[in-house]
Image (cartoon, rainbow, N blue to C red; front, side, top):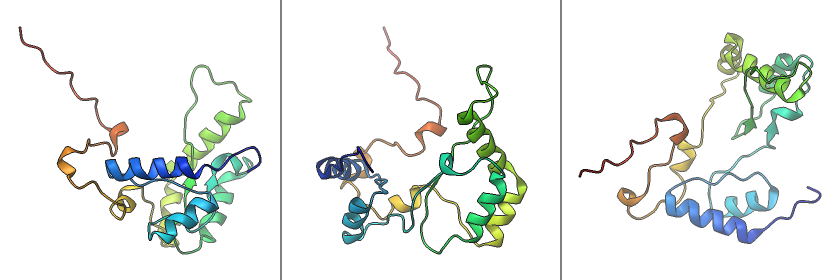
Length: 159
């Protein structure tokens, strides 16, 4: 990408941190993909799709065509669902993208399309099992799915 510098040293740092904490590292640029494939690590097989690049006009039909044509292997789609807020402006394309993604994801037809084409939707947890793990899992902080859980209670201090 123009203006973007590829930094192998930052990839090495991310890989080291991922190994330290038992996390998969998400990559999508060709040099990093090639390096990780050479190590036998699971990475995406196909170009990354960002929902902000999908035309807003008839987005559900466009997604349906993409799902029907999805080749075997691991694909990553960055979909950005969201609903209107009190500060949403009617012509805001960012919000239109988010609302259209939300509508597609909650539409029962989407589940039917996934089943019809034999597509399994997943997150990084199954991939994480194939990445290097720290030697002692008991000392590794639990970080997976942290955004879906309640915050831990603050420590209690007794007088």
